[in-house]
Image (cartoon, rainbow, N blue to C red):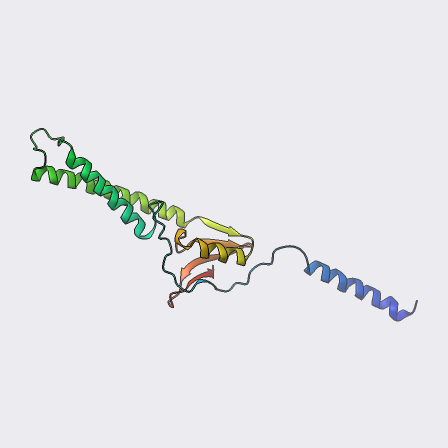
Length: 167
């Protein structure tokens, strides 16, 4: 074997080892840059089905207050001297149901804070962006999104775009 071939063999083995190592089947980590989820941030966290999030909490609790008042108004007042459908009966129902409304709002805010702290995890950026686009109404701004071990936050930039920004 010639000396030039013997010296080339270790280099060839090294090059092949490096090529195999870089072609490993692990998911590539996304770049630490901002990714556009949607051109329009409208509709984020508007899912009222759960009664939480955005205007959903107000709508949900407002409906609960309305039902409370109707139920109270149909019943005989709990105060003995009070006449049904009197002005004082109206004030009593309004007061009781406003209390229930405020309690509901506090509970919904606590749920929103708890949900906002939740993390979403995805194996790659394509899966994350696809899921976020389909479920935009279910996620809150500030949600932490982990993509292949890299942390991003869901935010709206001044141009009105909904983006994933690296933390």
